[in-house]
Each structure stands twice: as structure tokens, then as C-alpha cells.
Image (cartoon, rainbow over all chains, first blue to last red; front, side):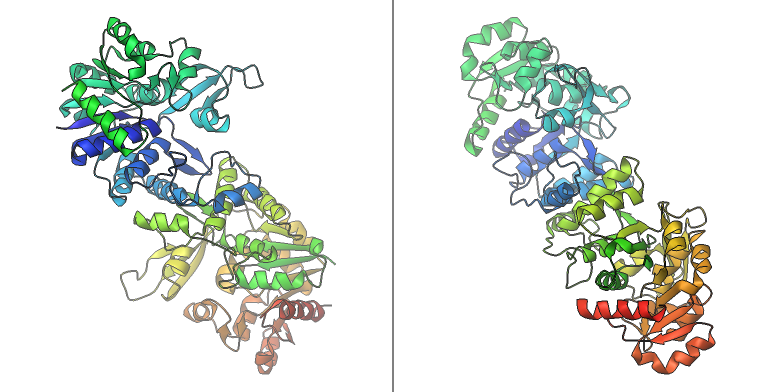
Length: 314
Length: 314
């Protein structure tokens, strides 16, 4: 069985860490959001690619779910001494990844090639593909009543710098129209036995992947074999601002709201047992609904979720 | 008394650390070589500016004479894991400086402004000016009989990557013709009571400073008040490849060879006691020669050298 997984950051990484326990890693291709990518201090930072990679390497910082284990902060301390931007905390080990990636990109190599080398160096068995090698940036319009009201900022300026504490009135994916799917992306979707949409933020993790022309169409063509795991459980995001963002952008923060966003390209939605009572409402939106435990607390529960997702569409 | 110092890296930094003990730091302006600057992993690295700054801050790594005290190497370890370029060892603390500088330059600020902020953050009392804000790169033609024969490489590819173990057939300063002196540089030279040429490599530390159009002329106009400390003692460079470079490029590796390079813009050469017997030969080249101890082993001997240099032209 070959499996393609549409992936964001922490939630997708945990899911993939479960999936590699139940499927041969060589059969898995993660197609990862790059809308969160940005430049800081001249370095190219790809948070979702790194979170997936570090997690599968068993090197992710267990306290945060991102960054590396055994991290130190010497570089950031010196940046702080200069009054430089230190709101995005780049650990010393993590910096090694950004240095390598930035240098290789400056040499003219595409992100997909550099990612392949980084992934290989950590000994990860799955394929990790950026959704696109082209510039694609998630831009967020802030709707607070502060001085930022109406300003459009890049994703990290919303997510990390403002700790996603400001309401949002719009999200767009700059560069998406001109972007093309990364090497192997369309083929992985077309040839997969199953396409899985990981439990990632629908608005800022999954939507930017689908915004690359060709990817949504490829997934839609596999709709019968595509299954999503709801990132919303009992009306709340397990992590991050997905629930508030959904409401702020006019959606429902529930498995039904997710179904309305996913039904046209995805046939099956796996919802948590806590949402069992909404299964009929999901099905009314045109998706098969499968109820299963979806909370990933540790490797064993992640593997159980992965198994349930595969069973849901077997 | 106001003093302008033409400066390279380690030797100049030690000299400046002596000078601040005998002159008010606020009276001192260091005009620093940027020909060694380069880009690696997307970061802008300014080795001589940093060596001067770290040394005056008392934060230089005492074992190497460059880099920071208490350094760790976590980022480089990860770069090495990826097979990335790790021949130029960037310590984690040191990386903080490169991150801040690179980010500020990317914002459009000139190197001189960024340097001012870095210097201020370390609480250094002297002014530190890049010789120019414009791109100026010392390029070295290799003359080995290996596969590199005849290749022109940037300075760090010679100095660090090849550990300056390859003979050299030419040195040029790319970008020099189009460069203009950094803000304050010409004024510091014109208004200084004394201009000091620090004991730095004549070929790759001092020459690139003088190669910026206007600087050599400004120093020449102050020739009577300009004094140099020979970086060659008893025919050898105290540090680095200056002695070999001089010979490879057709000069004499001696205080006389230094005098032949400096006499047209500098009136006085301070030579070490070990070279007392060559004083008459130096004077035959058209420079006053003053014999004094010039070896800088510690803060006290650095201060003594600084005092002797000031006395030589009092």
C-alpha cells in the first residue's frame, strides 16, 4: 500500500509518527505545507517541513512538539543583546538546519532537493515533499481593534510574533497562482492507494497545500480514496488557533465545519468519539463519517489513530 | 588626542586593546578591513570587524584570538550532519552576530550602521568603522601545483578553507574601484592627531583598506603624522601567512619589505628590537625607523607597544 499524506506541522507530524508504525515508511509520502515558510535574519525557515522531519527522526523537542531535543539558545541570546528580532526563537541546533537549507537554496537548488538531503541525514524512511518549490506565503489580515487592525502580515508575524492572539479577517496564499506542485507531488497523489489529510489546521495548513494549482484537482480525482482526520474535537482545536480561525472566517468550529471545507475533495472524515453525535450531520454534508479515537498522546495512541484511519477507508 | 587606526583582525585587535589602556577610548577610531567579509549559509560574515569588537569587549576566545569566549558548536554539528560546508566554524554565540548583521543588512541598513549597533551592544568605547559600506572582496590567485593552480578564490577559501597552505601568485580587491569610504572614515583620518597602521598583514589587511579610493590619499595627506607597526618581526609574521605572502608576491619578508610597501603614505615604522640592525635599511627606504618592543603577549605588553607607538611620533 502506498499512502500520500497532506501535512501541516505538529498534528501531522504526530500522525505520521503513528503511521510509520503501521505501514512501511517507504510507502509513505508526506506532502507538506510551505505557506508558513519565511525569512528571518537572512535565513530560510520551513517550520512544517522541519517539524515533520524532527518528529520522525525522534529528535523533536518533546516539550514543545517543534524544534530539536537538547536545544541551546546561545545565538538568540546574542541576537537579543543587539536588540535584534528574537520573537521567533531559533535554537542553536535548529539553526544548523536553517543554515544548510539557506546555503543550498542560495546555490540554486530547489527546496525539494534540499529537503531530501535533510531528511536523508536524519535517517527517516518516508518521503517528505514540499507542496511546491515556488514561493507561497500564507498572509493573514488582522482584525483586532488595536493599531494592527486591517494590516496584512505574514503567517509567523501572526502565529508566533502575536502568538495568534489577534482575530483574523482574511487569509490568502500569496504566490499560489504562479506556483507549481513540487516534484513527485502529483504522482504521489495519483498513485497512492490512500490519500490522508492529516489532522492539521484546515485554513493555514491544508488550504495552502491545496492552493497550489493542480494539487486540489489531483486530490479531487482521488476523492473516493481520500480520508481526513478532523483537527477539531468537540468544537476545539487540539493545538493552535484553528477553532478561532474557523469562526472568525465564517465557518463552524466543529467536525461539521471541517466537513463543509473538505467534502468536495475528500470522501471520508474520521471524527473523534467525542463527536459521535455529529456523525449524521457530517454525512449530511456529503462525507462518510467514521468515529474513532483520534487523540494522539504517545506513540501507541498515534499508531492506533493511524490504524483507524486506514481501516476507515479499507 | 584623537587617533585613527587602520586595522585588520587579530593583530590590530590586540594593538587596540593596548591602545585603549593609554588613550581615552572615545578618542580612538578603528578603520577596519572588510576585504575578508564573505557570505556563507546566506549569512554575512565580517571577520575583522568581529575580531576587533569581541577583543575590545573582552569576549574574544583567548585560545584562538577570534570568535567568542564560552562558544558552543551545536549549529555546526547539525550542518555537518547534512554534509554542509563546515570548514568555516561558526560558533553558536558568534552566529548571533551574523544573524543580526544579516537581518539588518537585508532591511537595507549599511554595514557601518549595523556595526555601530553591534559595537554599542558590547559597550566598547572606541568607534569601529568599516573601511567601506560597499562590497569589496579580497580575491586570491592560488599558485600551487595541485588542481587549484591558477584558480582565483575568495579570501576565506584561501585563508580558512585551505588554511593558507597554498602559495599565492596574485591578490586583488574586487569592487574596490567602485567603493567609497564608509561614513566618517575620511574625516577620522583628516582630523586625527595620529594615524596608526596596526600590525596587520600588509597584503590582505592593510592594502584592501587603502584600495578604497580616497583612503590612501587621505592617509598620504597625513603622512607626517602616520606611523605603522611592522607585522613582520625578524623575518616572520607573528601570526598568519604575511611572511610567505610577501615573498610569493615578490616582496621581502622583513621590516625593509614592509617599509617599501608603506613609505609613500607613512612616515614612521616601529620595528621590534629583534630588527634593530635593520633600522638603517628601513631609513634608506625613506621612513623614520623607531625600535621598540612590539610583541603583544598580554594586556600589559599590548599597552607598552601602544605607548611606544605614540611616543615614536609624539
